[in-house]
Length: 203
Image (cartoon, rainbow, N blue to C red; front, side, top):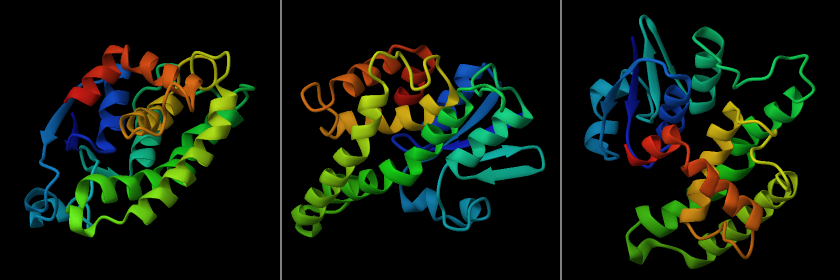
């Protein structure tokens, strides 16, 4: 049985979303996004830095949301959510799958820190503004690429659970708007109509 160590409003939602899309059985170890849970000795034994998500699969324990997704798709079930290596869509799938952590999430993290996590007196509007501009630049090529498409590579794939998660977060942060990124805004709305996505974001 797979066990997902999970806290809401985190990258763990990506993993939950993928598990739901694939119809895999799992147990959810719900944690608070708070040091009392994440920095506990019990959780540090799973992840030395006290981060989430972590996925347990028998004797296997793995962290990093992208690595977890690859593990699930390779070792359990891919449900057609990962194109074969000889599929002409495969390079673009890989590109968007990894674009999330490489280009989008660093400025998202900075915005969250200086909007939500830090107390108001420690939030830096200059730092947040720089991150918002970087995030807008990062989304520009995705906005162009998804023109006329329902999902990132046409059909729904695991890349959508990665980059789509970040797109939904960016919309909630007010960066992806109907005015600035109409294609991405509509994409985020489409994703939220998928039952697996809605469940992951409401868990």
